[in-house]
Image 1 (cartoon, helix red, strand yellow):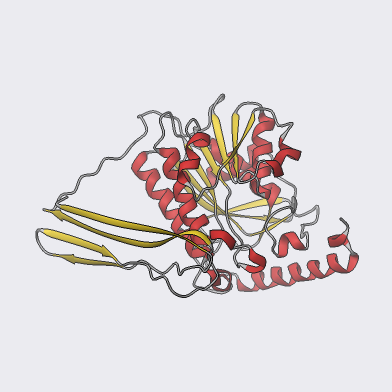
Image 2: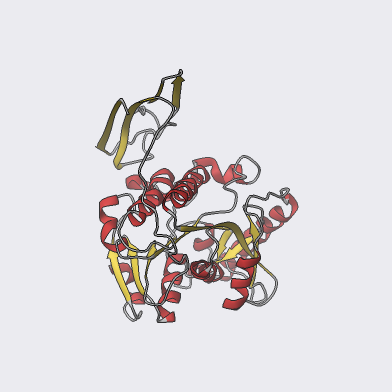
Length: 376
C-alpha cells in the first residue's frame, strides 16, 4: 500500500442517525487504484437508532502495481470440520427462543463444554441453572471486545441472533437495529472467533428464507425495514471469512418461526403463541433459498445442532416443516448429506405462501378468542 487513511466516528445520541448506504467509488489506471467511501450522513430517520452508533466512516486506499498481498489466518491442514468430543461450542444468542433450545440440546448430549452468550444472564437463570457443562457469558455482539472471552476457546459457533423485521413497540431502541445486529453483530462474532488461537471447525448461522429473494413478493414486504438486506450482508461476511481462514460454514434459512418458547421478540408468532399441530413435524430441507413454509423452533434447533457434524465445508439451505413425524438425528444427518448444490433457485410458490399466511392469521384469531394468549 502506498497510502491508507481512515476515520471512524461514534456518537452517543438519543435523536438517532441515518444508517445510509456506503457507495464505493473506484478510479483506476495502470498503476494506481483508489477507493473512497463517503461519510455517512447524520440526518433523517429521526428516532430509529438511539444509543451509541456509528455515524461516520471515511477511507481511502491506494496501491501500486497489479499485485496485492494480504495475510489471513487459516486452519492447519487436516483440522476436522465436525465437532469433536470435549470441544467447547459457543451458542451466541443463547437467551433467545431458538438459542435456548440449541443450548439445551448441546448440554443434554454430555459431550461438550457449552458457552452460552447472551445479553442478560439473570433472565436465563430459570432454565440454565441445571444444564450440565454450561457457562453463561454476558456479551452484546455489537461490542466486539466483549466477545473475546466466550469465543476464544470455542471450536464451533452456533449464532442465533436477530432482530424483528419491523421496529414496532420499541424493539429497535438503543441501536438494536438489523444492520447493527444481523450484519455487523454477526461479522463481529465470526471475526473474533476465527482469529482466536486453537482449532476453528464450523460456524453455523441462523438466517432467514427470502434473503436471496428479497426483491420479490412477499419478501419485499418483510424487507421493508432492511432486515433481509442486513442478513444477506451478514451471510456474505461469514462466508468470505470461511474461505479465507479455512473453517466450515453452514447457513440455515428457516421460514416464519412457530412453537415455543414464546418469551422473546414481540411479533406475530410469539404474541399469539402460534404453533403447528402434532402431525406437522416432518423436516424439509432445500438447497439455497428455495423453500416456502413455516418452521418450528424445536425443529430448527435440532437442525442447527446437527449442522455441527457435517463434513461439507460450505452449506446453505432453507428448512421448513411439513406433515409427518419429527426426524431422528440420523435422518437429519442424511438430509444434510443429500443436499444438492446450494446455489440452485426455484420459482416462487406464491399460492402456497398465501395459503400459509391465511392459516397463520386464522390461528392468531382463534388463540385470542379462546383466551389462550391471555392465560398467564
